[in-house]
Amino acid sequence: MKTKLAFIGAILIIGIAAMLDSPPPSSEDSIYYQMPNDESVDADAQIVQRSVASSLEFVLEDMKEIDGNIVETYQEYVIHKDAEGNIISRVPTENYQYLTYHKE
Image 1 (tube, one colour):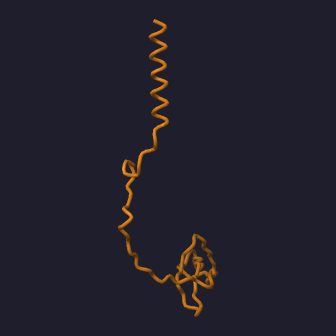
Image 2 (cartoon, rainbow, N blue to C red):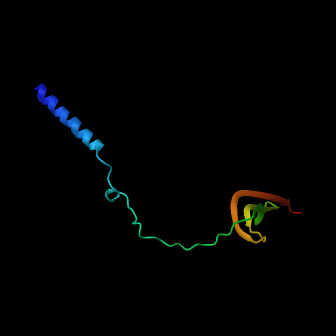
C-alpha cells in the first residue's frame, strides 16, 4: 500500500513539474485580442489650441430684490486665453460671491 501511494505521489510531482516547466503560450493562444502588425490605423491630427494665460474672474449671474435689499450673485470662472488675448474657454467653478445693497 505504501509503495502504491509513493508511486502515485511521485507521478503527481513529475506531472506538476512538467506543467510548470512547459513554455508559455504563444500570442496566438492568448485570451487577449492582438492586432496584426500589417494593419495600421491612420488618425487625423487636430490642432489643439494651448492657453498662454489663465485667470479667475467673477461674472454677474443673477440680481434679486430680497426684503428690500438688492442681492447680486457672482460666479467665478477660469478664463483661458491664447497669445493674442482671445478667449479659448470659460470654465465655471463652484465659487460664488454675494453682494448686498440696501435699497433706499
